[in-house]
Image 1 (spheres, rainbow, N blue to C red):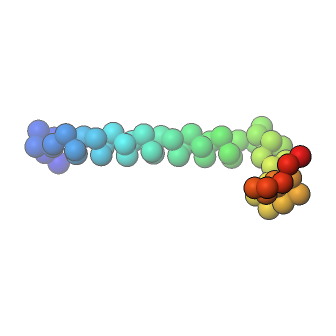
Image 2 (image 1 turned 180 degrees about the horizontal axis):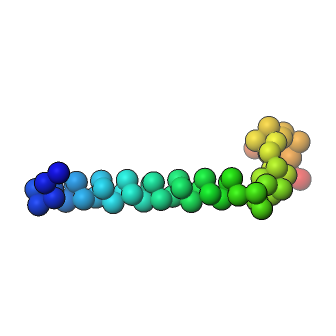
Length: 60
């Protein structure tokens, strides 16, 4: 790898790739930490829960 020949676009790509990698590692650590299990288990069915859904014309 010729570091001196890398353009600004190459460095931006390297930067964003590293940021994405570090972000994914942080999310994996947060999700798979045993101390957070109860928090995530309580929200397990949130995407499938339609009872608290408000349609466009409906008011509470």
